[in-house]
Image (cartoon, rainbow, N blue to C red):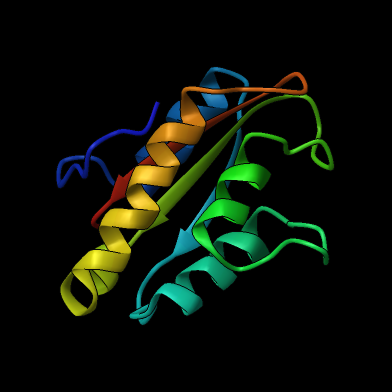
Length: 120
């Protein structure tokens, strides 16, 4: 499931926690990702989405609940600096964060998705 933003948890701690449980960590540096499009492109890049993947919330959900192009097991998206998008485009942030939470509840293809939002 997607964790709530946590000022106490650093990116390094989130990566270590994921790796300790055998998950693969994918870090998204959200600094300067101030639009929906930039953020969706960033998520697609760090999770190595296929070229055919669209850049909208429906495609984001479809990809996050599939992940068949990645190794089996848990994949954790660690979104650091999420506050830039939240400050510049709260609607986009809320939409993307909602998709992250929803996708975490519907694992498929032997891959589990989790998202962790950190401030640093």
